[in-house]
Amino acid sequence: MNSIIYGSALIVAGVLAAFVVHEVFRWLQKRADLTESKLDDIVLYSLDKPLCIFIILGSAWIAVTLFVDPAAVLGEYAWLFSEKYFTAVAILIAAWAVSSFAYSFVSLYGRWMASKTETDVDDRIIRLLEVSARYVVWFIAILMILQTLEVDITPLIAGAGIAGLAVALAAQDIISNFFGGAVILMDKPFAVNDRIKIDNYLGDVLSIGPRSTRIRTMDYQMITIPNSKVASSVIINYAMPDVKLKIKVPISVAYGSDVKRVKEILLEIAGEAAARSECVLCDPAPAVYFLEFADSSLNFMLVIWAKAFNLAWDVQDYVNTRVCERFAEEGIEIPFPQMDIHNRH
Image (cartoon, rainbow, N blue to C red; front, top):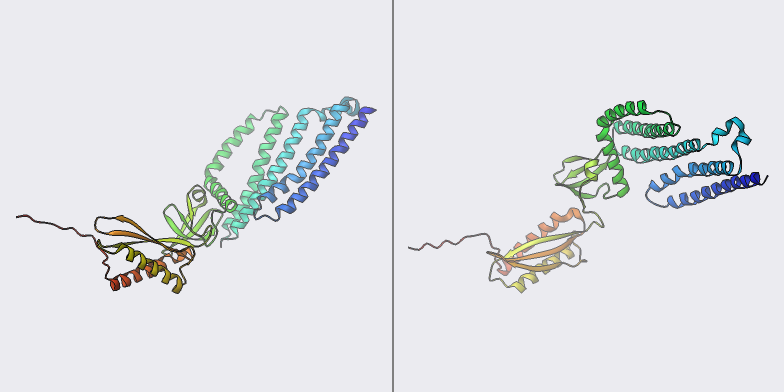
């Protein structure tokens, strides 16, 4: 009698624990709604019900096996509470959670990326990946269950291996590019309209699709880069952490020039640019550095800040034009490479 009471109490405790876990997940889901990423929402949604059901079934299994003799209560059906069948049920619940996560992950990020493209080819690929993700998870779960139940799965593994190899070879680029795109959306190294540099390609991001990222170069040419390559490349984002850009303008003057006066003129030009041009910032303040004694010139560097990354050429054009004008007015010579040859007779 005491065993039945203890077993019943354990089952009730399991139900209460499942209810508490469910309420905790509901609270966490409300918190997750406030975040930008949807990955936490997917994880919580996928784990909520499977975990609660596992807690209830686990408490019932422990109660029956620990406090009650299954053979005395269930008779010929006592085998249902053997350890291997409980393990099989646990695998089913885990497969439920994993397949739910895989489907939601592919659906959420895949359809968001596919909506950015004009054709429906990407939508078809996403539907295929959604179904494939679930089938793969459940197929692996069934194999694990059969192995747990001591069923020979060698023929199934052999057949699945051949079919899986063929599918993997045919779809490896699609799958790697899709997950590369999902990584980009989660990690957010850049966004649409950001100016980025990937390898030797510099341009503005036009779109981030399921298979590729498209950028428009400075020559207004569109380049399509596979997401798998983007995800594994070093990316320079000129729009982050903000859109301003430091511009370094090299300036050379002839030997004999007044270094102090040259620096004053360059700072005056930078101040004029900030006051008169909409392209230049006053803060951070511009700076001038005397860098080196070169072979035929004194080399300076004017550092100036543009308001946005796409104004670099405008700023350089303004500065170089004013440098030519002011140096001409001040009589400061801009040198050019030359070689003196002395001929001895």
